Image (cartoon, rainbow, N blue to C red; front, side, top):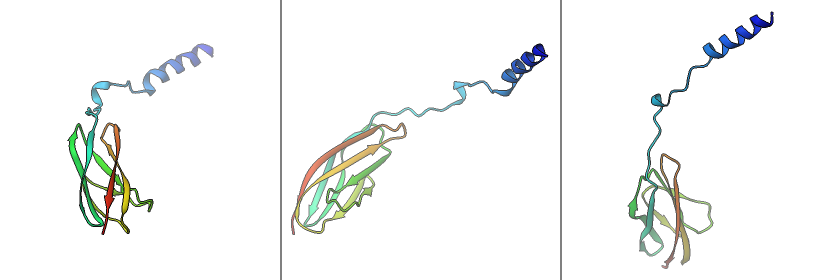
Length: 111
């Protein structure tokens, strides 16, 4: 009985699992992203864009820094502030390899 059980476990282990073959897998190859924050101001309207982008850029997220909990996604976005002031913009870039780049920059708006 013990021999049969051991033989069964050996056969099960060999047959039940497909061997892992790295040749079948496609892993993304990425260059880490980076960029500066570029912007143009028209009173309370500010357009943010990537300045000197480098590497593989997948998604770009923008936090305008006015604590309203609103963010924008895209390589070029426009945001309208409610009131004049100086705000700290946060830009986050991610790529397919889940590399992230985060930077900030102050911007001053007036009416």
